[in-house]
Length: 337
Image 1 (cartoon, rainbow, N blue to C red):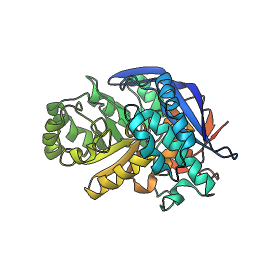
Image 2 (tube, rainbow, N blue to C red):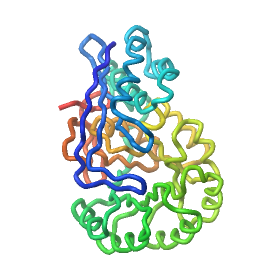
Image 3 (cartoon, rainbow, N blue to C red):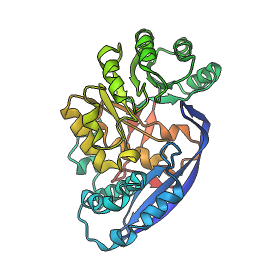
Image 4 (cartoon, rainbow, N blue to C red):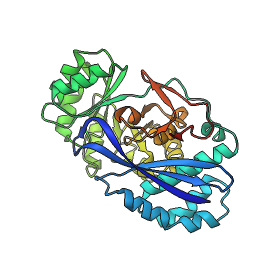
C-alpha cells in the first residue's frame, strides 16, 4: 500500500461567510491509497482555520503513518482506522481522508458500492439543502435566486438575522434551516425561534457557543424549534453529551475522523432517540460522494459543497434540485478528472 497526496485550492463561487469566518478559497487535500495491484481509493479533508488544520499539517501527519499503512496487512478499513488512530488522534481531518480512501478501496475490491458493503439500502428519499452564506440581504437574495432549490440552509449570527429570513422568505416557498454557528445566546434563541418557525424554518443548528452546553439544556426544553448540535458534536464521546441538550446531531466526517467513526456515531445517536444529520466542509466530489453512502442512516443532510465551488477536480454523486444520484462506479463513486 502507498499513499499519494493531491492538494487543491478550491475557488468558491461566492465569498462564503459564517459567524466566525469568511473566505473565497478553500484549500483541500485529496488522498489516494494504492494497493499495488492497480486499485486505488480516494479520500478528502479540507483545511480549517477554526480547528487549526492546514494542508501541510495533514500531509505530514499522514506521512508519519505511511510505513504502518504500507506494511501492515489490515483486512478492513475499520482495522486500519484503529491501527493509525493512536498516531493521528490529534489530526482527525487527516485520518478522515485516509479512512475515506480505505473505505473506497475496500468496496472497489469487492466490486460493490460502499453502502452495499455496509449492508445498507440505496439512498432513501432525502434532499440535500443548499447553503446561503452571510452577506448583505440583497446579495443573499441574489444567491437564492441564482440557485432555485427546495431546501436552503441560511447562515446567521448577525444583528439582523430575523430581517434576513423575512426578506428571503419573500422570494421562495422552500423549506429553511438556519445555522447560527455559535452566534446567539439563550435569550436570543428563545426569542427568535417562534418567529423563525412562523417563517417556515425547520430547525436551528448550533445556536450557542460549544462551551455553553449546560445553557443548551434550557434551550432544548423551551425552544419552539428543534436544535441540532454541530460544534458540540465533534467526536464519538460527544453524542452522549448531546442527549438532553439537543434534538439531533450533525456529524462532520472531517471532525470525527472519517466514515468509520461516523457510522458508529450515527447509530449511537439513533439509539438515543436523536435526529441524525451529516454536514460538509465545502469538499469536492470526493468528500461529498463519501457522505452520500451514509444517507440511509440520516434524517437530514447538508452535502452541497460541490455546488459552492467552481473548479471541482473530481466527479461523483450528482445533485439535482436537492435530489442525490450516485455514479455508476463502485466504492464511493468518486474519480479525479
